[in-house]
Image 1 (cartoon, helix red, strand yellow):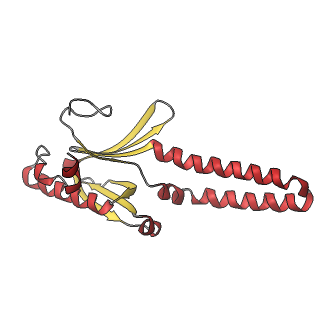
Image 2: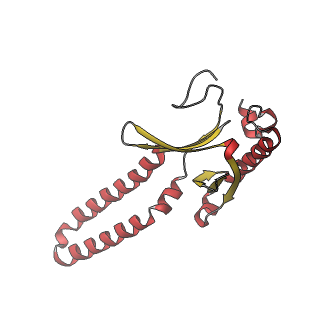
Image 3: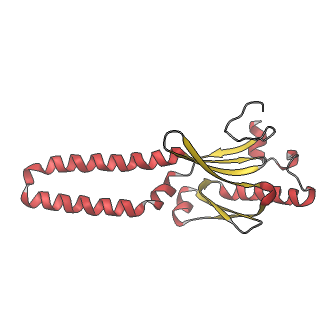
Length: 183
């Protein structure tokens, strides 16, 4: 791979997996906004129906526009967050503003454990949380990853490889079946 895909990428670093969080996770994290919005709509419709019933259609249209803005906001956040797993690091990119991108990363040589967890809503939609713990017991959460158990197993094999060899140079035996099919 000669071309860099993201700023700060090492020269021999290969991208193994790039993904976005699931939209259900973002909805679940912002559920309090949804309930506040629902209460405002209910009160708005109640007040309009008692006093200004002739404006009910305008009120319904405004509420639908606000609901559309809320849904657009969820997709906007989803498209600004990207999880990247490379041959050296696990990175979570979050775009802030138009030009600034912040990221959290953990090097695979510092990785101690990868724990997959499934949420209540995730069991229905097929996603989960991947928790990565480094040698200093710092945790990085990757919510909303599809097939989080497969990614955790793959990272566990990488951790075993690093314990034996001490480096992350040769992953030919540790490439998952899905990635081998596409390359």
